[in-house]
Image (tube, rainbow, N blue to C red; front, top):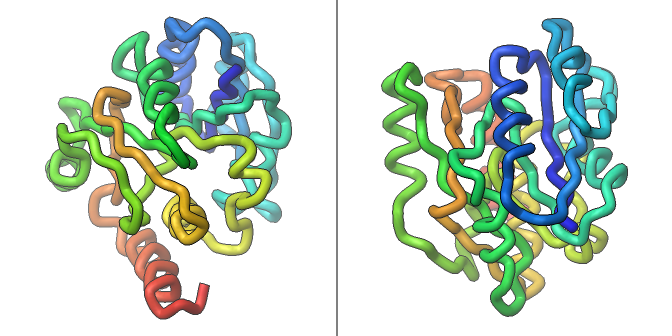
Length: 223
């Protein structure tokens, strides 16, 4: 079984399309767990219309890593597909493609392509098109990873859970630790989602500051 863990916070504009696209996946055996961080825009009412398990996390407890760990802890699958609530799987084969990417030796996780929507701003379109290419690759040193559209093995997560103390870039910090243990990561462009605001959310300087500080600590070996 694959557990699809979806993180949400005020995703009313996207979550119905996200969950509907997930529900149409051709993969034969999967469940959905939604981890919601105090949404106030009707997100939870929309989620309640779908056959999913809802887990809550408060602002006081929230970090991206902790939200993922709680959702995974509430799930049952041996494979864990991680999806942002504002990402929409592009085809009914999205989950199949992620699962196939995990078939290689020592693969701890895989992540898929992200494409902009027509009304995404030009900064986000540029970032997505230049970051997520068309060539599949296996990573043994490069710790780029992106949890908006990814899959990891439960047995690896049990040994290497997501860091709950950092506020952002928990995906790359996790990837660095698993690569250090001799695992591999796969980029699978056929596992595609649409992502409205992209990986940098336009020119959000506060987000850029958080990301840069965490990566600096990793590069210095202090994290």
